[in-house]
Length: 301
Image 1 (tube, rainbow, N blue to C red):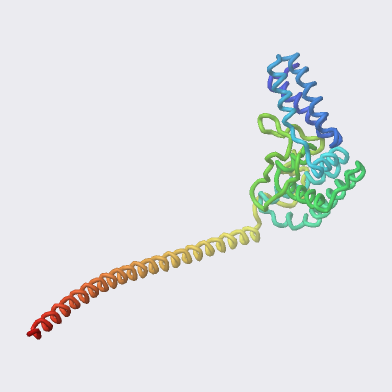
Image 2 (tube, rainbow, N blue to C red):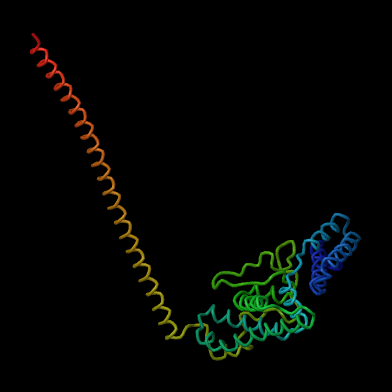
């Protein structure tokens, strides 16, 4: 085991198995998973004991079979590290620029972004076709969505670079990319491994290696600061307008509730008056009937 701890040894065995598993043809995935689990169980059991060997095998057996699109992207990650490096590197630069609100860099890389995404989609489609599984139009859309997610989120970038995707990724436009069930993970929840050349270790890039860093400072320019202040003021004005609208709505609601209460009271009063009127009519009818009876009786001989 060398200097590996027990946990490190098991995770290394599982990660090696995952790396091998996600490189096999899709049709061989299930059989390969069983074989790798059995091999890992034997190796770990011999080193640490049967319990640990069984646990390692279960971890490997839990690795999900990729979709056709995910399999194609994993294949591209292994066959063309250049296109992956371009995607990962561009994503690192874009996220670094976004973090320091560097609008000039984000604007300048739009063309590069489009070209990088297109190159990635085309390369994935090429390797899939060469492997006998041409991507459909929807498959290409999934590859494009995954590339966009990788540019936006570091964890998504690592997932794509790992070559162990189980499904396509997507980015909603804010927040983190949902990686649940999307990539092979260790029992601790981290990505099994990232293929050589696929790490975004330069995020953010050092001043010596980043062309933009030679001319752009982390501090905002006066124009950018003014734009940020204007945006903040606009957001504040929108918040105030929303608050006023809410207050007006609350007042309108309160007025409607008061009117409803008054109408209910008026209705109850009208119902009480109607009941009283009915009682008066009944009493008057009784008196009328009594008077008629008396008149009739007085006319008898």
